[in-house]
Amino acid sequence: MLLLLASFCGMGWASWKVARALGAFAWGFQPPAMAAAQYSPTDVIGDLGGMPVKISRHVAEYVEYEGDPGWSGPRKGPPPVRTYASRLESFGFEVRYPDMAMLLTEEMWADQRSYNIYNTPWMTAGVLSGKSYPGRGFMNRPHVSDGNLKGIDWWDTYEEIKPGPYGLVEYRVSGKDPRTGNPARDAPDTDVIYLYRDRAGNVTTRIVCSNVPHEAAPCSQRWDLGENGVSAELRVQYRRGLLEHWSSIQQKVTQVVLGFGSYLSPQAGIHETSKQETTSLHSR
Image (tube, rainbow, N blue to C red):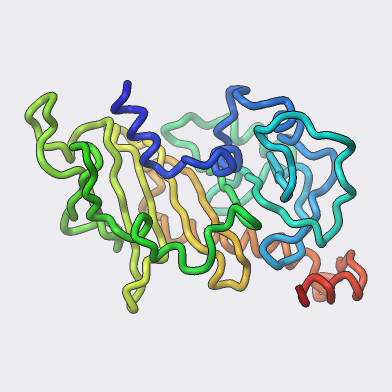
């Protein structure tokens, strides 16, 4: 159990904000304030990393603004009135690959329920911004960009495995599993790390998958939206059977999140903020 716990921790879910944004409270393990925030009674508006957004209340889950109580207990006093200047800190949403449909209708809910963990095309995405955003360039910090990790214990010391699949660089636990004497890279309770580096050598994608021997093994992919001018980190969780589509998934989820802002663009004809408010958002 201790090894399994260490494996889950190694997937990068240390922050409760990330866990919440990625649906980790599906079994009801959440404080009342966060349970109340699972579904918003109104469409969500705010400032997502410098981009004013509007998100359907049927899409955004576990929405957190800067200053919300989170784990700290119930809110003291009424919640503030939200505007397009209210800084979003995290939220999650469900999306279906490859058409990127979301849970906007009863038919989509029924579609999601029609699959099992071995064949579902549904993914859970999480967005971190505001104070929870690690900052531009975080993908190249050692704890993210270094696949050759040298940990204290046998299960967190990795080595590169060549060739990597789907254009990725693959890292697995090195040495032998002291419990069995077999190669540690095959242990089902370890993780597999995948990195993608661009031509300049910068890490643009990090994926961590459970090594359990079936295609429903969970994978968590993360990347920086900063290259698109939005100070936000994106994460998406899907079954390992979708790993081969990692690049398409990253592009499509990025466009979905950017679309929360383009929904307000003048070109869309649905610009709901005043010119003065929009100017103040972009001048901060």
